[in-house]
Image (tube, rainbow, N blue to C red; front, side, top):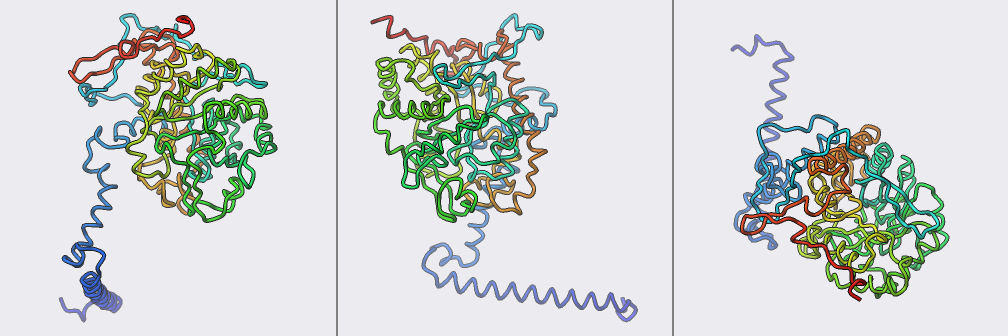
Length: 504
């Protein structure tokens, strides 16, 4: 083609593109030369020294692989910590769309530890089903808490998660009639904004109710308790992903507002003690629980990961010696595979008991000592689907709490950026640009949908087992696959214990 026949603006555009191409190639060559020299002369990386430039692509692909696996390579049920099938159910429940599937289950029922439920030959008819009844927590308190909720929002601190996320969770919890735990980061205006029932968590640093030098500030405790929405107080002893380690809030997340609510320094990492310094034994723990209850007039319990379970035996014995009124009003059992925003890998991978073992263990210890009716049990840790929640009720839980399930309801994509300030969905970041996409109004609807659909489908499992509501599920309604490929009823694995008092 004769270039002279082209319009002048086309010729000019082609010349510009040619120059741009030469410029880009030149920049590429300069980058290659500079990178080659830098890699060849540096002494930190053997690969980059031996294979300059090329080795950098290994690191790039290694980093990107973490994010691409869930889309292109991992099968529906093999990804960790939550696989695609588990997340997909939450997404559908939160959007309130059809959650039915076709053809057949993709769940492998053969691995040891797999739980399935035994259907009744005469399942509960829909007209005979019941809504869960109210459970009263804290009968010896000035202000007991009565709630029928079966699936609640577990502790996620303001600071660990963003303002739009807190607002969406608060409003969604109110719509669904479930409670919301503040996490250890203190009570913010955004927790109260939606009108939901609140459980105020007290971590080892006592954020929100502490004196500057440490220890409780009674005036601040009373100030928090004065809010009608604050129904209970939870003393956190340990958390599933990091038992033996206090909370970790990276300095990048410590904004001016968070520093005021928590009483910490802007921009500095907030590292909580690995335990409450005042609690050195069982009696100290009972004393602290009763102190908080006396000051606030509201139910008080504690959250812990089960490890050395002899602690629970000792605690129950002392409670019976001191009187049942001294007992915690509830205990939240967290699982070794619980979640967190940041934790050392040595703890997150290796420490504590999984809930599948610890929940029935604690329930049985309470029964042995005659305290099961006095102390309510909440189950927490990696329960985001109906089967997980139904299992917890079979094991003996009174309530089930979830954090990561509600994060998925907010739109979490498991990007594994929680310990940074770069969460792409705006949930665990304080970057306004990333928070922009998280609309509290629409996400609150998804939070409520998720909670309601969870309670609905757990009810479906209960009805198939022949009981009218989830809290009537028993251990014989579940079976666990053993190493030999056969299954055993859960009540055979964890038989009903004999009360110690009867023997005495």
